[in-house]
Length: 115
Image 1 (cartoon, rainbow, N blue to C red):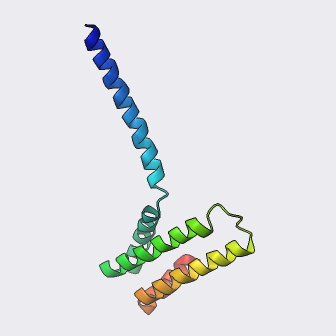
Image 2: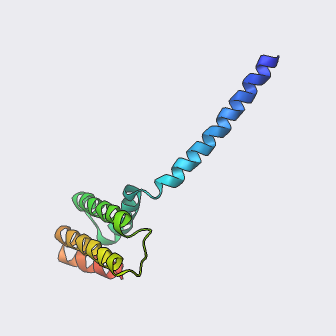
């Protein structure tokens, strides 16, 4: 009987511990550049009527932007001249990549969505 109760207690402990681990990993995944980029591409995809190739290219461009932001902008003084310059550089890189991929009409819509 003692082994049975110990086994049930151990099973409950393991199950409760698994919930905590799962919850922590889910909250961390939301900050990954891939997750953020996927959400942004999904948001603009329907409005711009993107093809599969356009979606893939924009996904890569947005991932690169998020990685650059995490390295050079996030967590730093947003009013600093160097941070503002870095942010502008990364935004310009994204705009250049987007302009290469989208048609002229899609690019105009994308620019309007950014404001």
